[in-house]
Structures are given as C-alpha cells and as structure tokens.
Image 1 (tube, rainbow, N blue to C red):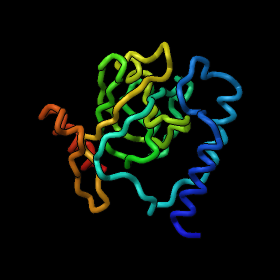
Image 2: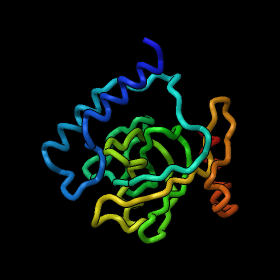
Image 3: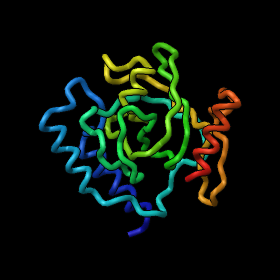
Length: 183
C-alpha cells in the first residue's frame, strides 16, 4: 500500500473514531473514555507521513482537552499537562509553535504542537485547558480560530518562519525558533 493510501486509511479511521480528545461540556463520560482507549490502540503514523511545513495560516474551530487526559502520553511521546501550552494538530509537524487567535473575542495564545487531532469536523486545533482559558473559550467548548504558525520544523532540521511570524514579537519569534530547533 502506498504511503498516501495508508495516510488516507489512517485519516478515515481517525475521523471515524469520533472526537474523544476534544473538550466538550462533559468530557468525563464513559463514552469519551472508550473513544480515548480506541485512539490509544490506533497504529502511529509512519515516519514518512507528510505534514504541512509551509507555515501558512489555518482557519477553523478549536476545542480543548478534558482534564482527565492529564499525564496520558501524547503522540509526540510527551505527557499531557493541562497547564501547558501544548496543542494537537492533524497537519502541523511536532514542535511547531503557533499563535492561536479566537475570532470571537480577539484573544490569542502561543501553543506548541505535541499531539495529533482534533477529530471533530471543522476543527483545526485542540488546546489545553490553560490555553482555552487564555482564549476565553471554556464555557462554549469550541471557538472559531486562526492558527498562525510562527516557527515550523523542517525535515532537514532547519526551522522555517511561518505566516504568524509577521504578527509576532521578536521575543515570540526567538522562543518559537528555539523550541522548533530543539525538535
């Protein structure tokens, strides 16, 4: 099976699994735990999987993880910390630092991509409860956002500045570039 077909099959399986990791008003339901267990058993994406290293902005909806995912292993191998700035993206490489802006109220937060997801239709990023609070989206659970990558790790070890770098402060760019280079 070609890599593209494998990715298509993996994407279908992930989308079919539902939105287990997405923050919803009642994330501690038995069904959410069952879906999370299904996701944990899915095979990892192959190392040659193609991710969006272009650095262009993405528009869609953000959701957030339930706190019950605390200390679980994310796709990058790190443990989920609800008080971190970690985020999940289906298309951005691990280590990407991006500015997520809530289009409803203009609030922004910096995140680092450490996980895969979200699984909900139209969602482009899952964020931690800490970031959800910074974006003021905890009550609704979902918010329209723009995800603007600032620093994107490349396959050759280089770091590419993304569309979000034009709007970021020099300090944010320095921090994002260092984090992406550490990948």
